[in-house]
Length: 270
Length: 357
Image 1 (cartoon, rainbow over the protein chains, first blue to last red):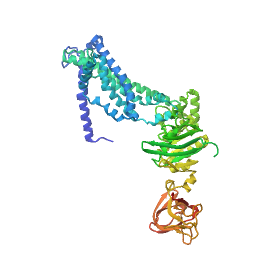
Image 2 (cartoon, each protein chain N blue to C red):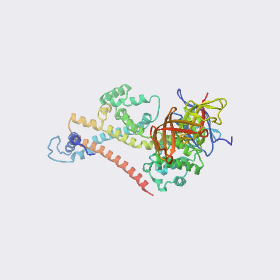
Image 3 (cartoon, rainbow over the protein chains, first blue to last red):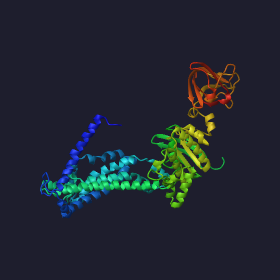
Image 4 (cartoon, rainbow over the protein chains, first blue to last red):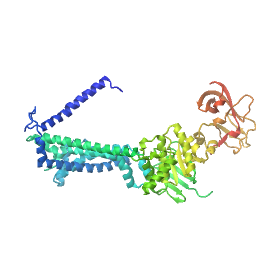
């Protein structure tokens, strides 16, 4: 169906807005990161990759990356596990408090993250837990695990409950059904939930700000440096962070593509 | 009774809260039989089959397979298997992996599994190279065959079917009905089939059970259910039918407010003094030419004419309401809507359904 004139105009406007407010700012950060100057100024007089070299050598940077990565990886793994069982409870099984569960699980998403962060910090204090990157993992999970659960639940809704019944009818026990039927069918949902969990944790600022204590994640450090003492490492690390996220998504897409290609190659034999 | 029934149900009751879905079901199914349970939606047939395969628990009553109680045995330990309405083929597995699934669960070795899967593809007339196809690459009819192959790979004592043909188009359904009947003959397995379609039941089954409100109304061979229904419900469920109120006197004489009855006409096998309904199927009703004489006659106006393929259906407006008559196309009536028409039929093509006291 050819788009009408007004639809075309709307699409153009949309495209221009996306470029103007999303990509151009990112590109300007990228330019800033390759400026040789100590302070941010346009137009850039001399280009250099000096700050990337410094970033890679800096122990501060490697500490930041280690902290951010540890938090994000732990959050990803734990949320995927929670999301798997949570989604089954959300979408597949009839139980008494199911509708209550479905509503409650959405609550953390509606809380402003700053409020949630503050609440958790006070809670950790009253429990006598000293905040560190580990408490940040808990804080991230409170916000991210429900999102991951919803992503997997959408997938769980879309598959026929008769598949599990059929497997049982043919002699499969509960664990066999989980391993042979439920897990493979939910796999695409689990992969996207994992990706989301990682990216949301990797980029999270408000929850980390309140709950990391003496430790610091990458977004926290970027903010701190902007407030007090700009360093050219700020745009450099910003770009590295974005590139890292892109690489992760590309890897995931490549893996998904390889699995499909492999499957089709097997199907094409004979 | 000759021998022991393969499957025996005794007093099966299933309640969901206050609602009684199955209200005391007794049934014997024999080895090698093609048994069909027919009923409208909500009659309890799906509930019954779920109990039989073990996906739900009975509230009370016993299910026996070869004499041994199985009603407390979980589904995965029962030697029966079901073909689901949705077929429930595993979308993440190939055709071959689907068929081999029950064998894999029994830890049979891969080579033996493959051999068996290929045999089953042959049995169901699917090309052997379908072994590596994805389910999404198969057509509706092919999926049906894969689901059957998978169920047969399980090698069940009884194969249950939960309306697996209901989602297919008419022509394919007709083909598969015949194939299923043929497969039953070739495998010698016991098939228990549920459907809401009378046609499906009539084409395939050895015996048919008609279900209504959680009970069996009638269990009999197809011809008997069609020709000698025990109730108005069965008569109307099994296709087009004409029913006329009729009383019999203590001396066997017949009387009706609507039908003209020939002097001396009698119904055999009717208790004198009974009142009830006289049933005649549309294909047994004759258009009465002048001079012809029938046990029962009635006249009315032609209301409509409908082509049903090989047959033509006529509707007549009579004092008894609409009467349906069916003729072969070659015996087509040359009359117009609104014409007065007389119809007649003899006692030997009718069936009397007595009022239940």
